[in-house]
Length: 173
Image 1 (cartoon, rainbow, N blue to C red):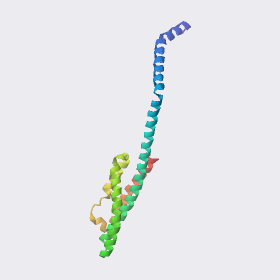
Image 2 (image 1 turned 180 degrees about the vertical axis):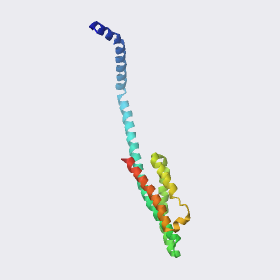
Image 3 (image 1 turned 90 degrees about the vertical axis):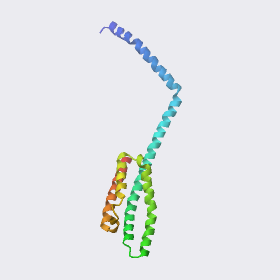
Image 4 (image 1 turned 30 degrees about the vertical axis):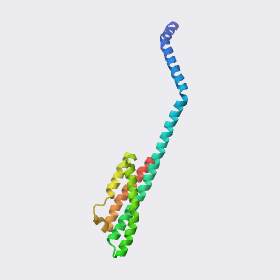
């Protein structure tokens, strides 16, 4: 390619380059004019994103603590119900009933938390929470009258509790 041919090629691109340069300068002028507004918009968007991320992490931490307590309380409620079922005297039965009545509000609060925030959990955790709530329902009252049945039912609930806690831990990392 000769110098004349190179000069002709550059001249053919000149109007396009001039138009592109003018367009970019116009965009820069508009951006410079609205710079503070754009900074505010970008800053607010970033702040909103960080706030949502922090709220999501806090929700998962609350879920971890709630599920841990719920698993423990579920076992104690089953065991206490079994003790009520097998109580020898009315006094013994009433003492166990008082213990159970203290536990029921805690479990109800935990179930309310799970229901209220169910749609906010990640899909894999939501699936496990649904399984946990289904598994916590007693198949029959025969479970509370038998220590092995209580242990089996509680073990299944505890496995789901541990699965949820592991999923939450993985999500928080």
